[in-house]
Length: 533
Image 1 (cartoon, helix red, strand yellow):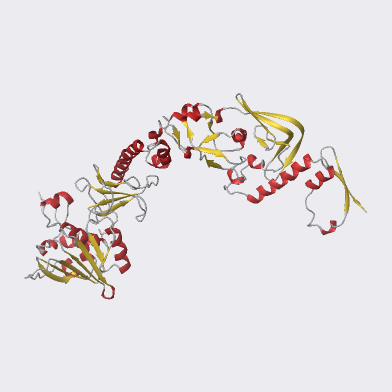
Image 2 (tube, rainbow, N blue to C red; image 1 turned 180 degrees about the vertical axis):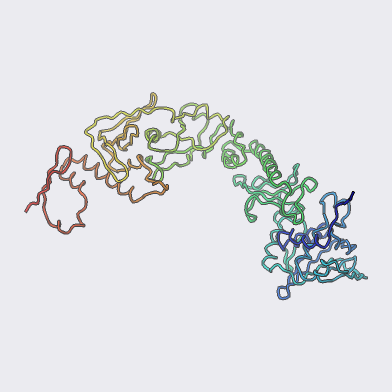
C-alpha cells in the first residue's frame, strides 16, 4: 500500500501567487496597513517618476526580523494583532510583484535585492543596523504602476485611514476616518456615521449611499466612491476581507444586507428623537427622509399632512405628454381637522387616461386634492380618503345643439355641441361650460359653448406610437384641425364655417385668383364644384 500526504511546491506556489492580486497598486494598501499595525502616526509615499522609484516611510515600531518579512504565510505580528486583524503573511508579496528591486531598512537590519532573485528563493543578505533612526523605509525601484495610478489609489485609500498619509510631502484628506470631525456611534457591526442625521446636520437632506471600511481601508461602496454617504467602520473581530487583496468582504452580500438593517435601525432611533424635539409642521417637512429610511409610520399620529403626499390639478387634464397638464405639490398645510370637518377633500386617482377623463375633470373642477405619494397604511388619512376610481361619474349633456363627426389624423369620433354638461359623483355635481370632455365609453367629444381650444383631443390619445415615441407633429395637426372644426360648427355664418374647414390650396397655382361654387349634400359631402367665370 502506498501512502501520500499534502505537499507544496513552494516555487510554483509563489510564482502563481502573482496572479492572485487584482491590481498592481495593492501594495500601497499593504504598506499602509503595516505602518498602522506597527503603531505609526503617519506613513509617507514619495515617488520619483523619472526613475520609477517609490519610497515608503513610517515611524512605527519597526521590523524586528527582516527574515519574517520575507517568509510567506508568517506575519510576525503579536498575538493581539493576529487575534483582531488576522494578518496572513502574504501581503508583502504584492511589493515583490510590483517592482524590479526592493530595499528594506528598519531596526532589524537592512537588505536590498532584485525581486526576481527573491522570488526565485535566492539568498538575501541582511546587514545589521547599528543606529536605527526610528523610521522604517521601503524603497521600490522600477515600480510598475504609473504616477496617476499611485495618486488616485492613495487618495481613495486615505479617506478612511486612521493615521496620516502623505504623497510627495502633501497630506492626503481623511474625511471618512474615525478621527475626522464626524459623529460616529457604536453599533453591533462597528462605528457608524449617518450623513444628514448627526447633530447639527440638515436632516432633510438624505443619502442612500454608504461606504464600508475594514481596518481603515475601503471594502465596499454602495455607489460611486466619490459620492458622499453614510460611513461604517466594520468590527475587525466580526468581519474579514478576502485574501490576498483584502479589498472585498467575505460574504459581501450578507454583510451589505446587515449594514442596511443597521443603518435603518440607527436612523429610526435618530428620527424618533427628532419627532420628540420638533413641532409637527417641522417634522412633516422631513417626509422624504422618513420615506428613505422606511419610517413613514412615525407620521401616523401627526395631525398634519406632509405637502409631498398631496397634489393639486394645476391645469386642464390631458395625457401628460400632450400638453400643459401637471400635478403640483399642495403648498398650504392640511391639518387633520381640515379633513375631518370636510374643509378639504382628498381623493385617490389612477394615472390619467382616456377611460378616466371624467373622474379627473370632476376632481379638477371641484378643486379636490389628489393623494399622490406613500404613507404608512396605519395613517389616519386612510379613514377619510375617497377612492374616486371606484365611483362612477354621471355625464348629463345640457342644451345640445347638434352632433358632428370629427376625423383627425390620429383620433376621430362624434362631437356633441351643447350649452354645458354636468358631472355627478354620488350626491355631488359640477356644471361645466368652458372645458370640453372626452367620453371614452361613447367615443364622443362633449364640447360646451365656452371651449374652442381643441385641447380635448389630448384626453382621447397620448399620441405615442408603438415605440412609445411622442408624435408631436400629428398632435399639433389634430389640435389645429379640431379648433377649426369647433369654430366651423359653432359659427352663425355658413361661409365663415366653410372657410374654417377648407384646406390650404397654396400648392396648386392653377387655382390661384379663381372663384368656385361648392354644392354639398345633406351629409356634408361635396357633390359639385363649379368655377365661376
